[in-house]
Length: 200
View 1 (spheres, rainbow, N blue to C red):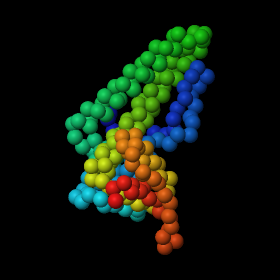
View 2 (cartoon, rainbow, N blue to C red):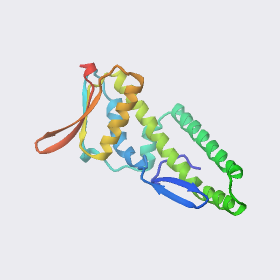
View 3 (spheres, one colour):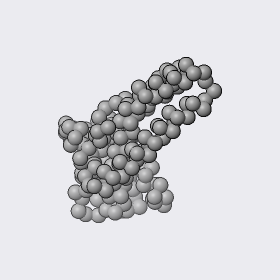
């Protein structure tokens, strides 16, 4: 399968009765908001500073450009390939495991057919998710190394998801940091603030 990002959809649940979708946003939807933040963090030259990103600053770029902005060196590509290889192995195990389920032959055949039908969908969704998290990992490391104090964005669900991912990732590696997300209003507009007072 080609290594790229592209829109797929919700998380899929598969069994012998059919294919079902549950509400879980495809990480692809957040990548176009995350890449400009990542680029701003890469270009920071001063410590103890803040960055601001607004929805109007999100330019329309191709999936190829977004992918290459994140997977920008051989090491990252190798890590992405390893994550994908591990996931595909899991799918293979799940497929073979159908034979051990307490189902009749027709139900097993239907289950396997459903898994085969949705395999590319699941793999693409995993690629999107892995690329997103590789970008979050780099953004986290840049924030810690450059001691970024604040990220300010427009208040919307896309930026909120990204800021929550960053907060959780930072706390996972530096539990002592008092990092929080706030919403505030200025000039009749609402904003989100990822605040890290530990670096002030």
